[in-house]
Length: 253
Image (cartoon, rainbow, N blue to C red):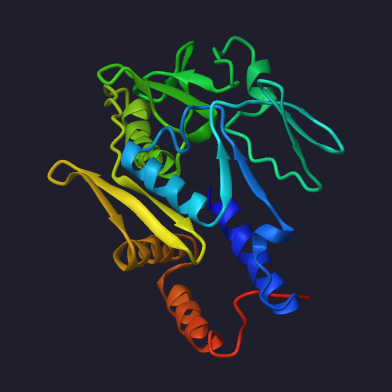
């Protein structure tokens, strides 16, 4: 969803500059093909609907309950004999683990080649092997759902495993991992930022506009601090403030 919106904005700006304000829909058409009955099916329903409304508003067509059957040089063939003529195809598929995981001797994997793990993040057939993130499939029995392959899940599992490994090495009982969904933020380029905040006291609270945009920026800065450190992040942020005055939003060469 974010990639489609970012490409739409970039192309619309290029067309605006080069073709004297011609609408983007006259030159380039965007389609999102989704196998589920709605986009962002693993996120709250209200967020899925709001994002779909915004995408339709900027003339990005959404085709739900459709699977890509074949891609040719002339277009994309979807289920129910639906054909879309195309010149450029951008493929963003779902999560699938590396094939090598299915070749590891004796370890259980699912149909996506993810390692099957217990709530202690240990593989089901070898308690000495731990897995986390996108390569792991962890069932939460109370919710009867699997931990989603998302960044916040991997972050939580990494923090959990840092402590659990100490217990494992010292022969102590291992704690159980419980995924906590704190919400999601979706950035549709310069068009919209929307999301949901979730928590014990908040419930499921929908946000959009400037507040959502600020939270999205805050999360990005938090990521930079983790990767680069505080001072580098501060210097980069200050540099970006000044660069904004002279740097164009879209690079055209």
